Each structure stands twice: as C-alpha cells, then as structure tokens.
Amino acid sequence: AQKVTQAQTEISVVEKEDVTLDCVYETRDTTYYLFWYKQPPSGELVFLIRRNSFDEQNEISGRYSWNFQKSTSSFNFTITASQVVDSAVYFCALSEARRAQKLVFGQGTRLTINP
Amino acid sequence: GAVVSQHPSWVICKSGTSVKIECRSLDFQATTMFWYRQFPKQSLMLMATSNEGSKATYEQGVEKDKFLINHASLTLSTLTVTSAHPEDSSFYICSARDAGVQPQHFGDGTRLSIL
Image (cartoon, rainbow over all chains, first blue to last red; front, side, top):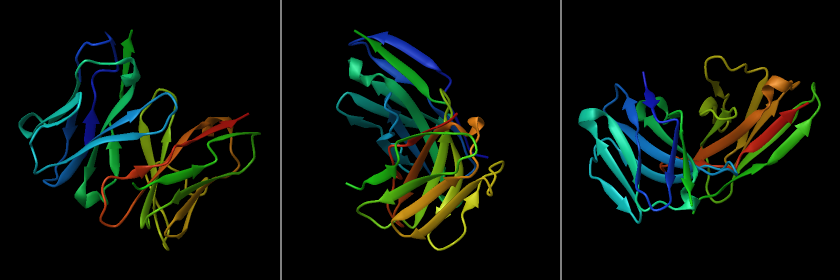
C-alpha cells in the first residue's frame, strides 16, 4: 500500500532561518513519483517539484532544495534563509505509475515564518 | 503553462440543495481529472477519478450517488454534491492531467459551506 508520512505537523521559525520539512513514503512499486506542493492560506495548491523513482539526484531551486534518498524512503525539503512569504502548508505526495497516477498526500506540515 | 480553472470558488447554500462544481482545463486536453476533498486542517483525500467518456471511479467510502461526476468532454469535468448537508461542507479541489504530462495541475478549489 502507498503511504506518505509527514511527521511534523507544525513548524515555526524566525525569518532567515533554514528549515527542513520531512517526508517518508511507503510503496511496493518500483516506478513512482514524489511531489511537493505548497498550499498558502488562499487554498490553491502550488506545484514545487516532481521526482521520479529512478532519479535520486538532489535538486536546488533558489532557496529551495530537495534530498531524495531511496535507502531511507525519504524526500525531504529544505528552505534556506526562510521568508515570511514561505508561510504555508506544505504537502508531500506520492504517485504510483500502476495506480493511474493517483496522488496520495501526506498530512501536511504547517510552516510559519515569523518576522 | 497549463491552467485548470475551477468554478465557483465559494458556495454557501441551504441544506438539501444540490451544488455543481466545474473543473476546466484551459489549454490542454485532460483525459483524466481527479476530485479531492479537504476538511479544515487536514490533508487532501482523493474522492474519485474522472475519465472522459466513461464512468468515474470512486474511492472506497465515497458515495457515488451523493457525489455525481460527469466528464463529458476533454476539457470539462463536473462534480455535483446532491442534497448537500452540513457535513458535506469542505474544500473541494480538482486536478487534471494530459495523457503524457506530469504533474497534475490543480484548480484553485471550491469552498462549500452548507447551512
């Protein structure tokens, strides 16, 4: 069965601090995709990144970076030099290729960046 | 980039009313659309998968007679909440994808409040 766990329910940091959001997943498939989405207070889902199971290369995009480790089934997300605008709920999600690419979401981490 | 439009963005209505929510893909043909529901401070849960020209596939525990889904064209899927009750109040969000495009593109969501 597919499952995504985001153990951190809420995180609060002061602006300019670095913060890492954890994501652990479970799947029996060898082909799958991992995602991070941002949900600001307005509610829409903003796509941040997709990573397929065959690509363990870490990625950096500006202040955002992602660490994908198949050995620990983790796909962690780090925000460097956080800003108030980063405040949102962040969801990690998993999609298995054989399950019509349905997304299974983690519980979400509510990130608050304080000025 | 690909855009998904969802309408209306906010609905308030009386108990017993049926409410229709539209999800449109604006610049691509969506062979598959997904409908999710999100209760306050919770994660997104997949309700059903909508395939153009065929019956929707509902997730376990979702009443198909309660949540009617129609995917009559490659750019439009509708979700109708029939005889809505206060417990149906939630945030409903759709997503769409092309046959070979990842990731799913999400609409901005519909906040449904049943009085």
